Length: 228
Image 1 (cartoon, rainbow, N blue to C red):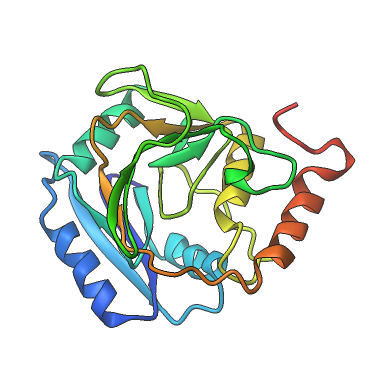
Image 2 (cartoon, rainbow, N blue to C red; image 1 turned 180 degrees about the vertical axis):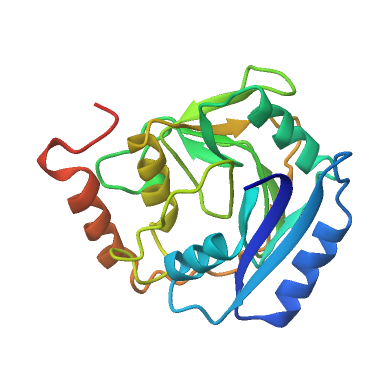
């Protein structure tokens, strides 16, 4: 394991989005003594399969899994997140948006427990700070039960549940629960202004409910909820 390496892992099916995503990565400040790597996975069969392949191909301690349409605005993103990880060995994963308490429906936005910041772009560009204001300051973070998959940064490797999720939904909350099952915390960093922009456009929910039912059965049925 290379403890001074950051690896960006991106599943993509649109070269234009990918090139813009890489342009923002190229502008990031790299902490002294550290290096970066990028793994792109084209036309993966599922997010879990693509991310598992990227994870296995890299020996980086710090892996950043992100969507092709996510653009990192904070040029100090690597040093800011590194500082959090170095001071919190039990923190397994960071995301920009998370839920303090996952609803039993499995749908993160079904209650008003979301926290974090995000600049989103569909018909208009807006800054969202979600339901719960962050009261901590720079360099701090809030513990959550699950994070949104637009960007997920880890300092430990845990297998993605490609045995369960064969599409593009619930890989993120599933991975959050897997980290918590392994004894790690999940966090959202304090952001005075959003660190990333998500140019998500119109989302495809054609298989969403099917994947949701799989998630609920696996993690909430038979008293498996980690939040209780």
